[in-house]
Image (cartoon, rainbow over all chains, first blue to last red; front, side):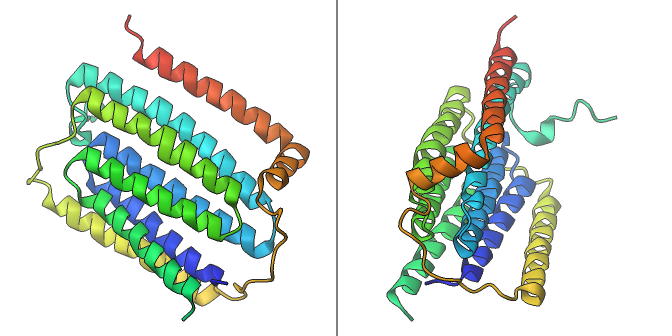
Length: 100
Length: 166
């Protein structure tokens, strides 16, 4: 059996990569992919702990996270399409109309 | 070093490599395909962690439905490539520093408090299968399950309203 700590370390690395992706990429769609990567690494930690403590609640939570991710992607991509229609660009650096 | 550990390390390298590839690929379509690879390796981790049903859900929902939606929008908008922005190099450096700080924080917490993280024992074969998941979901988590249906309905209506032409 592989110690659960290895999975948690992997989960932390993937979460960090997702956070860096949100920070450095300017393409709004790739920023969304970074958010998905972070949600996914949280799911991996949930499943690892569910296995360690032999409780299914962790796995059930992963289902709810997946549902939230699906709803978030649907609304988020609709927002991106709308922004692209209005500004002809999905560069997050150019979405600064609300800046004072 | 057992065969299982070698397999774990190989898969972990694939997962991290795919995430790094997503981070640095110029083309958004390549980024999406790297993310699909990452999701599939995570699904294999779920199989190793006694969660076969979740692994299948991961492949169909994440690597299938969600990523197809991403690819569809990338190709619909035709914005797979953005011109590199050279004015904001400091953003890249600052983001890498902040990301390294986040990783250092997590690992510090883990090193100083990571006691008692050993495997407790073997698990029954029904753990994480469709039957176990279904019983747990509908016996103990029925209300959250129903609430997620409302969430998905709201998401669907939101997507339709946002993209509707006036």
